Image 1 (cartoon, one colour):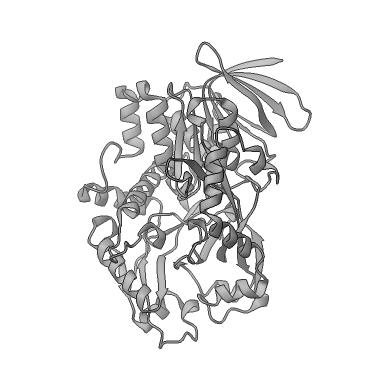
Image 2 (cartoon, one colour; image 1 turned 180 degrees about the vertical axis):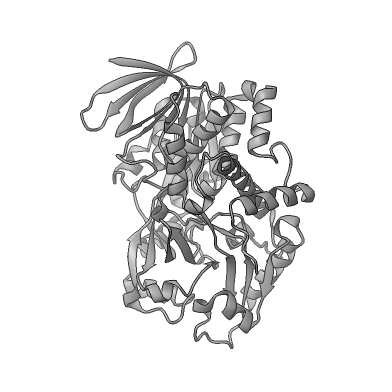
Length: 496
């Protein structure tokens, strides 16, 4: 068997692995980095443009990031954290645009206003409270609220077409929200990395075995999917950035930190508009409230996308039940992930989340007419023949051990790493790609701690992300400084 030694082995060619590769390459150009991908193309699973919402998740429009308690008080802490994390992504991308590592920003990011839209007295009251709480913080200072019919028609003309004006409605808006083609972003980063001598991308390659040796390094056996030839990799650090496939690989690693983790897969579908005359009448991301019992990834939105330079209009996503962990995976993925150490939390989640499972099955069995009915709550004049159903990506939510219920289902993301920092992975879905830079900086902080403590790495990371080591949540002046730069560099500062 052939053997090769590398400093870093990245499993998966999506936005997470590629962002980590780009960060490490900028911090230390001497690192020997190998990336492998089981598919014949890079960034073709969850990172691909049609497989995710493409929203630059910043808390501007996503109502599920600002829950209300029993007394009606709105908690904005998660929205603040996600907004600050997205600002980190914008800073890193800006730096790479300035260094010509990334192409002109219009190739991967475009300004698309972010709106939250609600109807009914209770939800309008909630939105007003949410607006007041967010507006008071400097991260959301530019947010605007309106319940004025004329203003709302200007903001979202399709949504307001022949709508019943007797029903209370309201919306909030941020003009410099963004649409991000994470597939294009990732492939651009990969193109830059591949131009370097110390980076290798192997497509059509999967992990057949991995184990840690007595030296603390990892022995990883790779298999070519086409001819089944194998190669052994001696890696100093391994990152499992395989999306829905990461859990299986984490389990295969055998590290103690993998114990008790399971996965709950959720499928997704979009209604895609095929009428150019309709598409050109809408230029915003309009998010509403999720149905009772729905997972966060199914928050409904009427969504402008810019894909390969062309505008598109989507509505959804419609969640559904699946046993696949990847869009191009196997229906046996869920069953193969069950082991003795995660059976208890899996059963606990199954017992306490029956209504969620029933909801997902019901979503999957919907007719085109029922999906169109949901769309008409946003766009009353939608015509059935203008819209076509298209599959989105799969998302694997985290299942963890919980003392009170045996297991709990979480809808965020979580980094899992070994105690010695030699292997790490990212589990979960939302907010995902939008906070990829912050997530991968967190991986570096855990797994490259000694190097990050050096002056050289500190200075380089600070140059890439000027707010690194400081709080955008606490420092209004710093936020103003970095936001002015990123909006200008990435050309996403739409004027009202």
